[in-house]
Length: 354
Image (cartoon, rainbow, N blue to C red; front, side, top):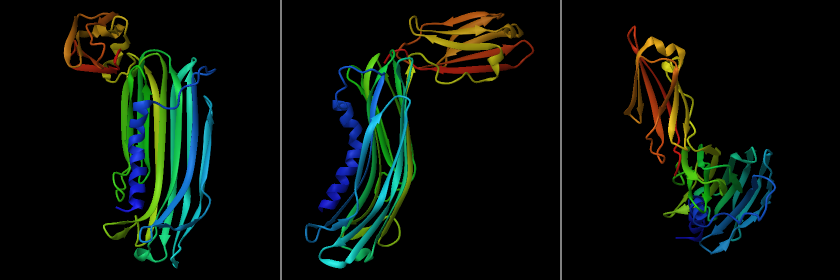
């Protein structure tokens, strides 16, 4: 195995294990005191590398690598871009040249609400092109990467859940994670599963957090490369050339314990209102509306199991108890009308504990 492939594997592994490393050790230590509920920073980087495995020498790379970083204040949208060209020459053969060009742009934003963390979002998009003058006869194995990073510390306002969602297209790879020392964390990653696979993808995760500090992290990478594998020069487009592009978007959101996942759905909403899940006594509070008198009965189920049957319903409150505080619940009300037919309304809620 040549050094370039070791570099490629190491860098790819870095994407896939960055979240694991975060969950194992956390990000950089949180400041002793902070004036805001969230504190974060961003970074965008462009770099190039080239190597000749025949001579074990570096090929000459001419071009400007960049590395820019800064703070990310709550409510501030930061947008940055980077790009450039790189000319690569084999010192042992001046006709063996390669050209790379392109770049990417990234955005980051963290928001607080009521003095606590609300959400963090990021996105990246870019394109990179590369071409070898000698095609498959080139001896230089090269890569050009555009990477973006975001990391920070936030305050969860109360016990609840942090939810990650991530989406990539084409050749862009991305990962994101969060960690709280007392409860653990979660991570997701998406992108090319192999060097030739144009695999955009999605990922999501949700995990419980207690009130207090947690750490979060995001990473994106777009890479164009010309390299040797199994005795052949590999690229991602036509012979001797590489073309990559793609996008990544990610969102980390705090969800209070017991919160509804979404609005209630179903035609029975005009008869029954599925309101809050209260975590102190772990009940789901529902309300029979005035129009419920048109029903012969209302049957409530929780996660598919019958929980309550109200015969001759009238306006009032119905509380559904006996819930598992560590489980998400889906409540369904089936309204059997006096004139015939049944209408339903459904709503789901996150758990109250981890």
